[in-house]
Image 1 (cartoon, rainbow, N blue to C red):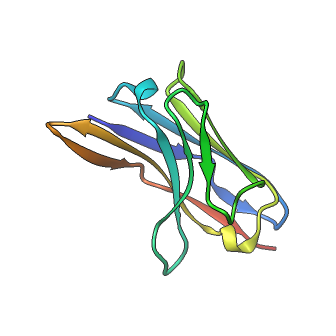
Image 2: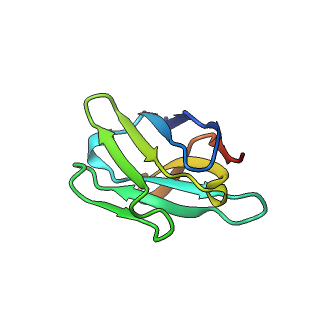
Length: 120
């Protein structure tokens, strides 16, 4: 069973930093790209950052490029999102995601989410 568990969210002042973590289990972690999404209050869930299975390639949404860094540790089955220079508009529930193949198809797995609130 695929499991993703996020942690590290909280309340931070504008300009501050947070590091989100996602612990993965139940699938061959090092074989899959991993993603971080976020869902602001009242808005749709959007992709924030992606990292390839080896960690060698990363992609970011324009709104976070230069401020956020996605990384992974394939020995620990962990993926991280370092968030710097946080802005109020970064306030959202952040979700870890993997799209994996099983039973002849593709499936999305999500964690429970972790709340990030940027406010003074």
